[in-house]
Image 1 (spheres, helix red, strand yellow):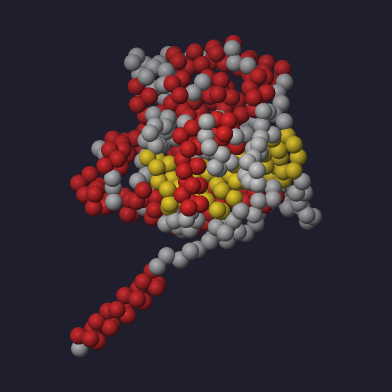
Image 2 (tube, helix red, strand yellow):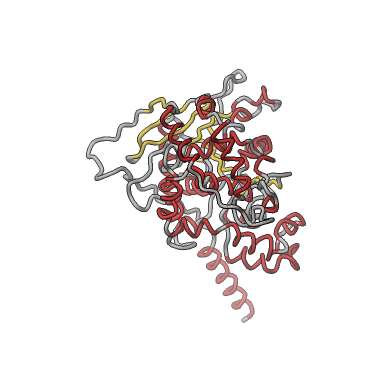
Length: 455
């Protein structure tokens, strides 16, 4: 009898294991058309055209006129950045923008890297494509797609690109030399916005996959944070055989397990897989997770529901747009910056760099379309889309920056990304990793590649 019970138990466990084990699912690739009107019957033009960022005196004059009409609202006493962008400091930013910022010079800087456009699924897709200036004999560069988020742009990567494409001339070894492609998400900057509802991260991932194929890359590496992290994750779920490695500096991995362990981790963290550093970054959980997310997620609720309403105001006022965007570069870089009168903005960034990013939204009038990306991805609720419930089965590396909006322990990352092979606690830095700490991020990407190639 005991032998029968034992055999039945073993058989039951085997059946349970077989049914419940991880299945390496992929997302269906499908196809789409996001341009205006109905899809043409002919073959889509797959040519790639050089593109140049341009400006005009009329564009700058219009900006200055609008800035001059800014209506100032005095801040509350001692409010710092607790109520949003402090309007006293905003006056300084606006004065610099109006009187010292040189947009024509910044356009020249933007054009230092080669820009291109190509039509994919009915949309003009903008990207920069930077090849190494030199290569060691007999070597080929590693193709790396880097994807930005909101309220950022391809410009976030300008300081990290030379560290990846020309490492030897920047104090790094030439063990890993990259060829970097940085597209603009459709509806951001110079990439055309969708004319149809439903354009989400999966559609973006498919378009960027087609872009890489069009550039001649059958296999490639991908990297991203913010929306870029989700888009790259979706690429790995769509075409895992084409993605040689996935590197992230943010991950959307909240689950029942992470929520439960978060509540128990302060007392039982070691048994739940938390390190001392995890506990330090997550607790007290009321302040570092719940209150922090409540403070910093108001914009998300608006953009997930009715993005066009607030977008209309921001698209009409450059000062309002700057305040809305730059506030994120304050508290998302370090939440403690909300205690400062200037939001700590110039501790990590220059006003030229910050305003260049703002100008990429202003001159292209894409703040509304960029905000719609929230509604398309999150407007139906959390965990309602198939990709949110799927794991990722490509080799993955993760950079955990200590001032990210929410810390993601290795244990959580590994649940979503079972092939996690590199996890790094970064020394400093926040949400805009490539923009703020290009050296640290470049070093961790290179570390990930070294681990991957040793396997």
